[in-house]
Length: 102
Image 1 (cartoon, helix red, strand yellow):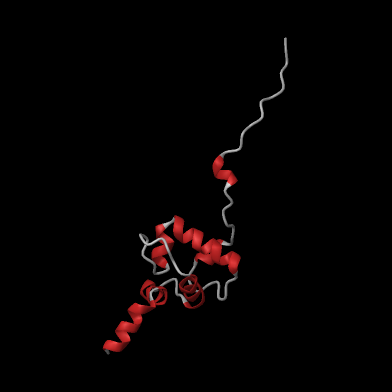
Image 2: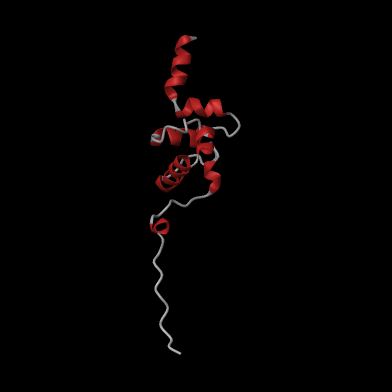
């Protein structure tokens, strides 16, 4: 009986790409307050990957580019119960048009 050394395993590609890690509570609009760059990266990655949090944050799920300022506004002043309020924070030009019409 001949014993050979075990074959080395090749890591999978998905594990080679680092993904941002953060507290899942950061995904609730208005919970985080002022966020730093690592938290911003985690939130941006989560909004890019899943459309449900993107809708909750007031972003269009089909639009994958989101500004850092808009994410920071919703993280600071957002409301997890009021998507329309978050939409006004994420897309400020909508709220400004409504204020001028009144």
